[in-house]
Amino acid sequence: MSTRTPQLVFTGLAQLVEHWSPKPGVGSSSLSTRAKIITMANITEYITDSFNELKNNVTWPSYAEGQRLTIVVAVFSILFSLAIWGVDEVFSGVIKQYFNWVKS
Image (cartoon, rainbow, N blue to C red; front, side, top):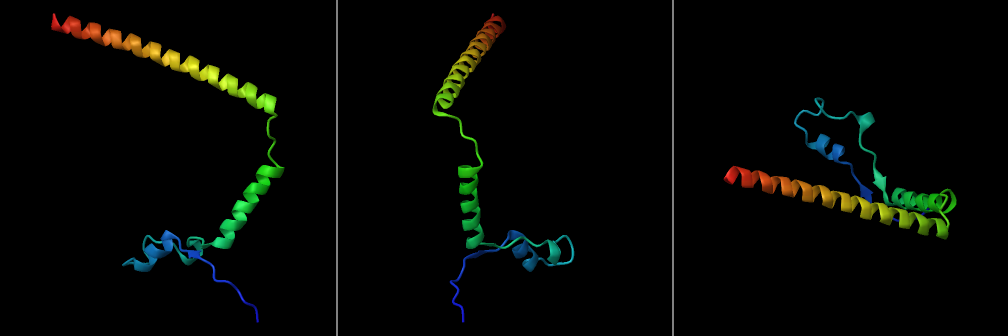
């Protein structure tokens, strides 16, 4: 006799909707396309597989390359923020001139 620990089971929304539908045959999913039941074992397996994928199959940059790429991102972020600030100042000046022209 095997002893199994009870598992938490999540029921998909499609199953709940079909259960309370006034016309189950119209506009609902068939039994073959019901939502997949997700158990805690499936979630644990997914997390474990994700960590293994990150550890064994992802090529991580070296520390020096990571620093270099961080500097590149910082420089481009500063340049783009300055460009956006410049465009904002130009449009702000144009709007002020327009309202001064309309007022006079």
